[in-house]
Length: 543
Image (cartoon, rainbow, N blue to C red; front, top):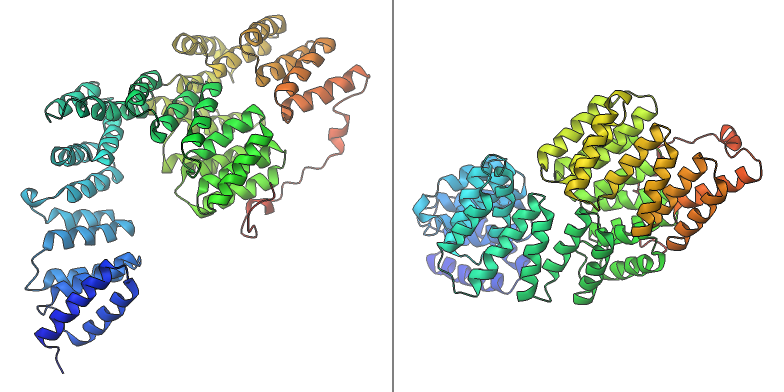
């Protein structure tokens, strides 16, 4: 018996009420009953749409697309724009970017809403069509300047376009001037976008200034605090970053955002108990965020348990395969385990997900390690360094990578030295560049110069890595009595520092007249792959 109009109107009203109440399963069941009664193409579009909405809420994207298409084909569809938008969102969730763009392109430009332009911008961005994405995000802001998701996305695509159009910051300022915002909002809204533009363009000093300006308007903003911390990390200022991450925890201890990065800073600083406490707090919040597992991997690394660290990094990847920092973490653990050939894959995946200087650093370090092992990966290392410079031409960190690769070959060391000196002219606090120069002195057997440089550095910045490096160079120079206090100082700052522990053990054996390398020949390296698979790892780690 065909469904009457009265019956269908009542069904529609009940489904709409249930959907508003969040009773998705009831709507799905009612929609399924309706579809068994009403043939496709009948004048029942509202019920088809409600049914598809429920399926979308259940992440049944292909079924939702099917019934949105049926609704569009109905004769009585008064809301085709919203239906096409929902249909495109379902396609986007299935990574069908071309299908989503085709669906939205049928909407006339004059009829496009803020949500339509926002999704168009995301789709164009996913396809690498930066100019079209920029136009879409500008259209969003023309409708509502307060759509800050579009502001931040606009900053990202503008950074990509900056190489061909260096006036990106001026263009953004002009865009907001034309909006005639209230005076107070006219100050912070463009500043927020510019801060993200500077950050995405790797102009981190400018980003810090912009976020500091925002901080005066929003002194308790978690977002601004975290991004200031991230900028300090890019500028190799871990102490400032640590302070800001601690401030972020005070502002909102229930957020896991960027806490994996905070864990990395704590690990590098040797702060065992604070890192232990952070990991415990994060696991008490959720096990569903990759940041939590990366933080746990950092703690395992600090304890010297590389196998567990790799399992935890794998868990981060399994929780969120598209989280680039999970793959970065995995790559760094593999490097620490002496497996650069495997680390290359992890860093490559991270770079595909979110191109970054950090990923290129991992690639360059992996290729350089392979070169030192006798595998000719010089061209691969040079390609990675040059791609880093293309990605971040304003980043001293990217320029360091070029110097690192040049230093591999004796005939290129003068170029490497000039590269490191250029980095230091841009950022005098760039520790990687300082180490690059010191390694060149070591390669030239100019150990007194390397020692002098390190002594000057530790006088200004008494950091564990500097003291450990100083101990290493003293050991090379056979000044064992000087190496001992350097290692002890490093360990007083970071008791778990593997480099200092290894160096101290080595120099003590040398002072006793023992050969510290004698035991190496009897050690058989186990290069099995079983620790790569974290499928057997369950539950919260014992931290």
